[in-house]
Image (cartoon, rainbow, N blue to C red; front, top):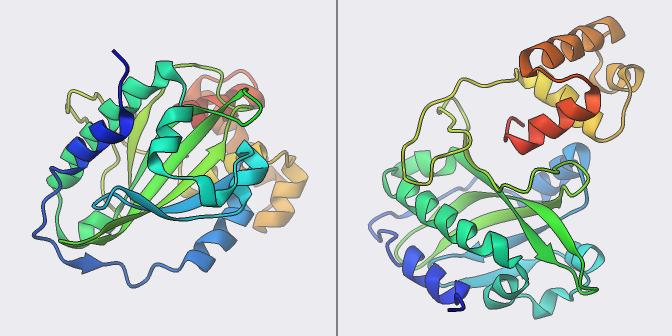
Length: 252
């Protein structure tokens, strides 16, 4: 039987409580874009998705360059139709687990988590790209639950076909990596320090140690020391393997 992803999403999102009334007044989409332009690890587009209403309210123009579809033609049923069939069920499981996770949180904590998972989307030319799907909640009330969503092409980074789900804690909240979708969450200590995350992101952009040193205003010796430590703590044998492990496991 063919799964109607949009109908299933509506059922999942229909369990979101309506008693919250909170908006992230500090969220600024232009500031977010500037950060993305600095730290992005691949080509990306972003969206505002209102899960309460089951609609996409805005899609950035970059989607046409990446996937080959015009922004005005993008809606949730269409995105479900171009998701790889092997990833669709897992994506729905992830959404169910994510909804249960946020249903246990209230107030400002709703804004202190970034959700991260991945799936494959079919381009207009018929080929597939693996997309890193990340989002944060920016509004939650009885009428609207808006999320800011970023989809980044990580085809060049992730070779493991198994999709993964992580909840990344912000502002001191605990993180949950590679979540068991049966809702068994185990708190994980961060694998990388904030500085190590900066460095591995720069490595993913193709920078060498000297370029990273100049960009982050630290010595090349410090960069090399961080790289050596990251290889050791992750059991990676090369920089390419380090980058792959970092993004496959949601460590950055």
